[in-house]
Figure 1: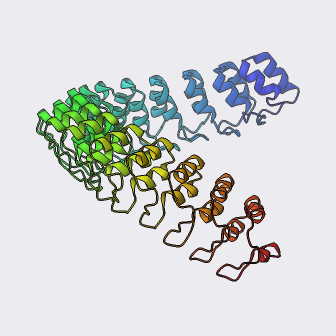
Figure 2 (figure 1 turned 135 degrees about the horizontal axis):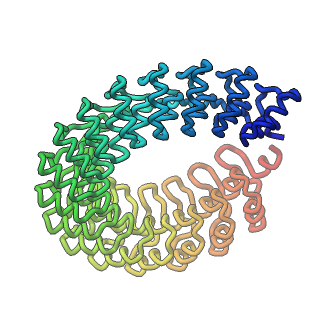
Figure 3 (figure 1 turned 30 degrees about the vertical axis):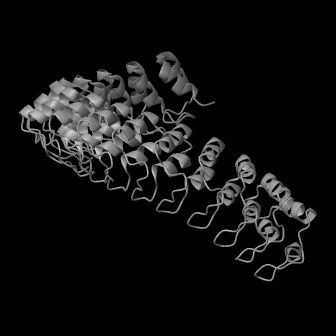
Length: 539
């Protein structure tokens, strides 16, 4: 049983049953299975007569049960003024913190009980006390839009610029809940309009992030600095660009916000708008002289940001306004490789039409074609080849389009590139051929296609590794079958001394080991360490 009969009766408010249970020996301070004491049950239920009875029978007025609610916070939470008065008269501690961190005063502020608030203050409640949840009474009242309570607290000495335990000032709390009347009240009572709170934000950046035009007007009229960088690194203008309010952005610009200012997080307003896909806002910023080729602090341009995110309308707008179509950004990407990664063909076509160099290697070493091949974007691969991309061009990391396509695992792209003249045996920087790449990745259909198109099944890479040792090492049994059928040498030793059999055995691929033995593998041949397959069987 979770409740005792006495706490159940106290919750229900049946005074006669409570009297009877006490007369029959019920313990009035017993904590039940729910963690409640009879008195807190009566207070939380608003049962004043039962509270009187329990107190007269000697109930401890400051006892806390296992749910750690005090009698007084229970009464304050339901707004029962008479019970609050009764408990205080019997010696209840008006500043006692309950188990969830509330004081009676913050409990009253939370639900807007102004009469109880006044009573608690008159009886000595500390108006500036930070409760166990980090709240002050004033920030609670501001967060819950209790104007009358706010006025009482300020009149009773609440510190109007005090930062609470979770980092809010009363003003930033009011800005977060978007209440312009309370913001105006706090400013009239002396709130500092440019104060950075414990969450490192100013009131203006909070208001801009929440899109509250009225509050922004109020703050600016009271002297908010429109170019102030808060401790999170944001300016009001970049903060306003995230929710995308054209009116607020225009307001800030009209009030003197610098449109090309890089904030402490490395963002420009235009880059922020491009990243979020706000085409109307992008147009507005450009009309107000935002620099379309400006690098932000992270190295991106507005154009590469829009290309990466796939916003074709913004890309077209930026190009029309003079964005450099071949500019390599600070992260090493060109607009075209940025568009080829996510695979937006509309943007790729736009960039090509505006003069993008289809064979340009970006600072990360990739060409647009290798980026599209790796990403598996068949239509873009076709478009790039039609516009002159070299199918055998080795990029700066010496990857070919075909090895990139084999890595990506898209057979249609592999087929397309081969049909356009790609060399099926051309090695990359590591000497890997398309076939060894496909074997590593376990792409059986691509392996089949490459062999049909003339890939050498015994060709080693720079380490002498063959397609067969690659497939054995990665455990791709069907590919091992296929390679052996097509003439792979089951006893070939690579340059690090491995045979297909020792490669399979190192990785514990017993089925492949048995398959190789069945296909004539020499189990007595030793690898570079002098170990034979027989050695493994006796380890």
